[in-house]
Length: 204
Image 1 (cartoon, rainbow, N blue to C red):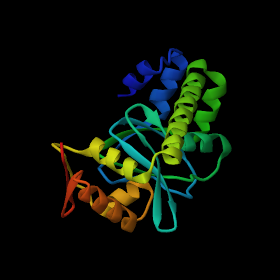
Image 2 (image 1 turned 90 degrees about the vertical axis):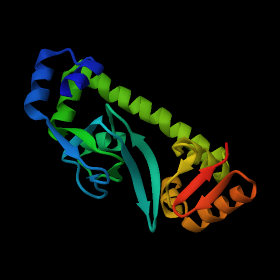
Image 3 (image 1 turned 135 degrees about the vertical axis):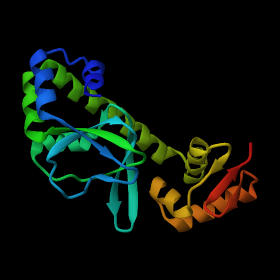
């Protein structure tokens, strides 16, 4: 798996390849495992090799989705913390069984100034994350929550069925359960879906 990471990001320097093998570790995490915890110091940079991770912030009783990390992606906010020796301001939870590459923070900063390929990896991560966050902001700013909810349901449906509770949907969309319940009832009245017990069936 580490070889796949090295190949994807064109880490061509033999010395850096050797250091990656000598200093990094690979860990496996079950679905629902807490991978990064808010307000804890970042000790290692975590890169997703396989699986999917949900990155979010907490605000009182709400969770605010920041983004998802898929294979060969890392959390930009955690990457920033590596350069500043500060605490994480996000949580990260595995959405499915996930494999993580762990690199000590002290090396992340050092490699960025020593190896061109690692600097390219860092810049690429920042650029892609920035573009994603701008896209997310545009959706939040201009798309009504009802439309965002329905689009989300369509994206998650398997055979036109979404098996999620109202609370789970509220957490994913950064709102309250009451708001989600009200919007779902409106969509049901508009013949967009049928509500069940922790199950939503979409009309084709």
